[in-house]
Image (cartoon, rainbow, N blue to C red):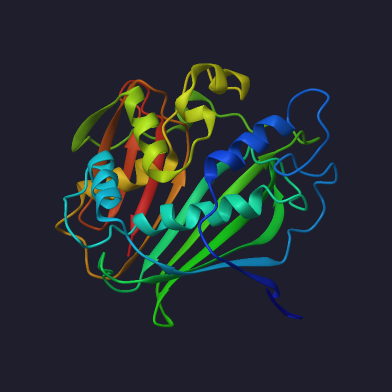
Length: 296
């Protein structure tokens, strides 16, 4: 364990945390009569984020796991890591931070609203990675408060990958909810492809990513958290879009997306991409956007 007066505490882990156990703690903490504990958040949501950075050195890629991830997301089976793959390696560290007793927001109920990944160079499955994850920039939002989870992967001290995931904690606000009339929504572009998204996408991606949030895998869990049926993981939808662009992607790039509306399972989505590297997912019937992204 190390500390820096400017950066806060840096904690070196010996292994990746088990996300299943962390989710169980978060669920248990929300049951009636349970004392607030890890993953339940503190009553004071104005409290600052913990100034802790988690480090995990010597992370190696299991090629069978990589192949399973590639299949679920639609990537080709190669030794080159998809830009979204290190996110699943760093996710257990993010979970550890967001279920800590001093974390100010309940884990369950957080909404993943945006993600930005910078792949600084191609990363091979044979390389050993060092991961660093921390939270930052808690700030007001029209619908509550939001914050970022920052992750970096390095090889021999050289950063090769950066990730910023933005989460929203919805809270009642005195301001009126913004309303959109049907005419406010622009007509979506013509689809370049349509994908059927089955409930198996939720369970398969949960298995390879460690993100076992019940809103993705359980009809009951989804209903308890305000969704009529399970929804697809946002990071699966981002990965699936990049898989559709595979073969045309540059060796180094930044790709950012905003998650607009959840993709209910089962369902269908229209995919659209432009030569200028803008892409999106829309509902085939209503035209409502699920995801809007760009690559540079």
